[in-house]
Image (cartoon, rainbow, N blue to C red):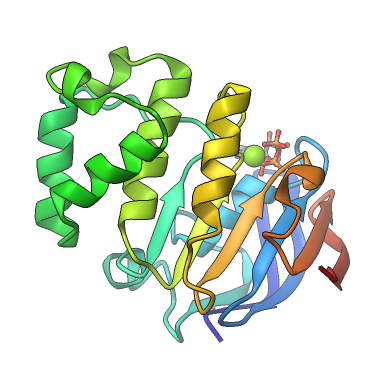
Length: 215
Ligand SMILES: Nc1ncnc2c1ncn2[C@@H]1O[C@H](COP(=O)(O)OP(=O)(O)OP(=O)(O)O)[C@@H](O)[C@H]1O
Ligand SMILES: [Mg+2]
């Protein structure tokens, strides 16, 4: 079991955003996570990553509490956030930083970026935040896919991509190790055809549907 969530409750002030969520993610689960805006998808993901402390219930990633063992669990997870962070350093510095901290090879990042049709060379000295929205997304995808992880979490990473960019990304996802687990937040289930084997639907902080998807 890579992720085990038991009766997770998260409130922001008076507002209950995660309402008694129970979910287990096994090795090889490729989950499409759907639900309306404000349902709590990003909050649930941030709780799995250890950014939020729950009000009650528990989350374990590989048996560890993600809040207490943030550094260890983040080593196992490749994550693409819904909104790119405002990183001020250049692509070159960012690549070097990631290679040093995660052990990923520079060439792997460049190769994934090329597959996403992002010209890293041309932008290598540009600060990350000065890339276009789609280019940022492509770069974050390249980094996430270059890292071989037990769990991949993609929070609507294709929202800013042009159709070709989306197609390239879905194509690359086919190469993920079948033992790795994926949580893929999307509003476009049809795009994930053949890439997911489970559907989890979240609505107002509750899981209202959790079912297998047949190929
Ligand atoms: N840090 C925060 N502080 C206060 N409220 C928050 C915070 N983060 C999220 N919320 C609230 O929690 C609710 C769920 O937000 P969340 O971002 O998890 O939704 P989502 O399902 O990811 O939606 P979307 O499809 O729009 O991305 C919203 O009402 C939001 O305003
Ligand atoms: Mg969200």
